[in-house]
Image (cartoon, rainbow, N blue to C red; front, side):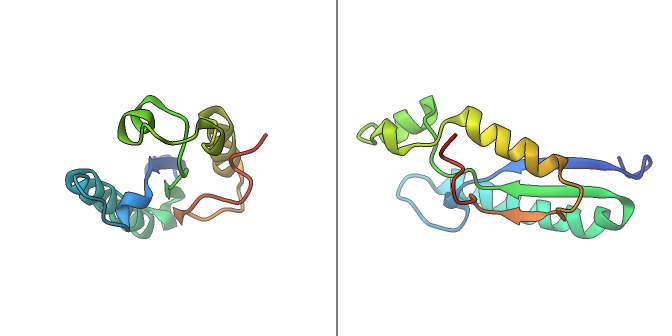
Length: 110
C-alpha cells in the first residue's frame, strides 16, 4: 500500500479498549493495543496515502455478543450488515482521514 501510495486498513475495535470489564482482560488489552497500532500506522503511513482506522462498531447482534451477554435484548443491538455498510461508506469517503472512530449516531438503524 505504501509503495502504491494508497490503501486503507480497518481494525474493528471495542469499548473494551477503553473500559475495564471483569474477565475480559486479554480481550480489552488486545483491543487497546490494536487501537494504538492504528494510530501509529496512521501517523507513519498517512503521508504515503495509506489511511488506517480503528472503528468501534458498538454492540452488535452477533454470536460472540450472545455468548458474552446472554441477557441482552437483540432489539437493542446493531445489525452487523448495517454496521458493515456504514464502515464501507466511511472507507469510500475520500475526505475522511485515518484514526479512531467510535460508533456514529444511527449506525444501529437502516
